[in-house]
Image 1 (cartoon, helix red, strand yellow):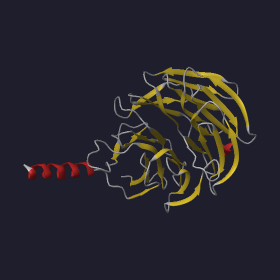
Image 2 (cartoon, one colour):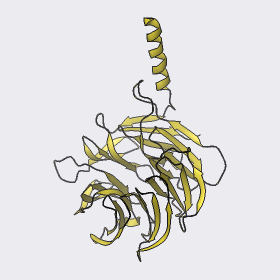
Image 3 (tube, helix red, strand yellow):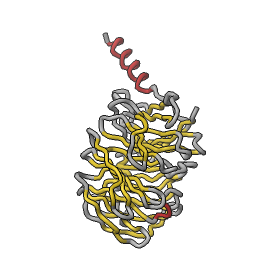
Image 4 (cartoon, helix red, strand yellow):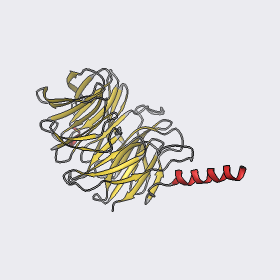
Length: 320
């Protein structure tokens, strides 16, 4: 009986360890995990909001820690959201009630603001001119980063859980906990379209060509919409599987989807080709699923796929 029990443990442990072996892996924290994280558009830089260490900036190529990104010196910040500018030169991080604008190459702080209402989500336009901010108090805030001034606030029906913004800052997109996704003319504060989903919006991702918008809602497969009018192009992802993060390839032809289960999937936007999938294996054999995916990105001119997990692991896979 005892040998049978040990044999079962070995089998379960082996099965739990079965995942898609990455070509490289490393950790941004050994304990506590991360609240949030983001790769830049080229997959060269990674910012993290670690539970115990606060904000951090990492260079992906050599896995090197470059700078601590805490909002006050000698204090550990609770970083709940972060966004790189499209060119990767600038970075915005948020605690629930404060924002800091950083030089992403040096980790030097450029400006600091207080913002009440509870920051939940961030997006940054080209040149770090505009920031679109989703708030727990149901506001969408448009911040002129260079001038350090709030340009507008638009009230939503519930907490704004996801945002996206065009490079020129003209078009914005919001998703809220009541399942509503909206497209906005930020220059005039006019709503361009609105769609409602059955679950809270968990992810928005705008394609680099700004023609497509990925929407992820709780317990709902993802959908690719036209960014201009919100029309549905196609569903992506597993049915009724919540998305935790997403990223389009630089040519807008492929899409990475991350799941709380530890799965990363790559979907073709316009083709019917089957998706390619990678699974992050659990750290311990008694874990039923893999580690939650916090952020995904392409690197090396779309030749590799990267993921940040909730326990602070970074995985790199070569694309087939």
